[in-house]
Image (cartoon, rainbow, N blue to C red; front, side, top):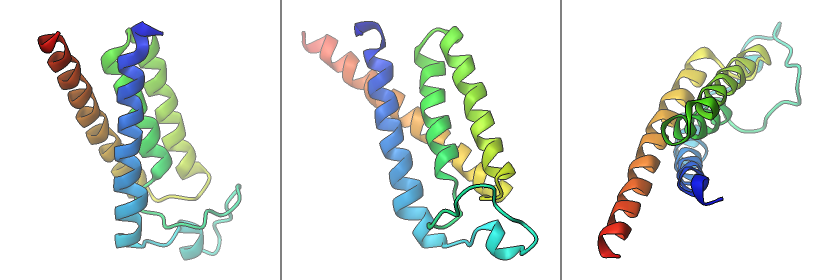
Amino acid sequence: MKKTRKAGAAAAIALVIGALITNVCLKNMVARVRPYDTYSALIPIVTKPIDWSFPSGHTCASFASAFVYFRLLPKKYGIPALVLACMIAFSRLYLGVHYPTDVLAGFLIGLFASALAVWMVSRFCDHKKQTA
């Protein structure tokens, strides 16, 4: 739909930026083991992820898209997206697959990725309007 095209493009860009920062760069540079590997009493409820713990990619992705929707769409869509992102972030802790600092870092990277994506899309749209 034409009304949501800008938000969709910005969300896709934010997801790519967040994935590059978290999954390609930081996870491999930091190489932090998962909580269930550190604490033997902690038994994860889900299948054990095979990658590193820091930062949380799920948290980053959920907040990257939620902040885009919050900024570019009506609040009736943006607020539920942020609530869902908070629930996803909490679930990473509850499932025992991340430390709180992993989730915090994912949140901050998602916030950065969304701000950069919204800026990029807005700049492109403004440039496109000026040349038309």
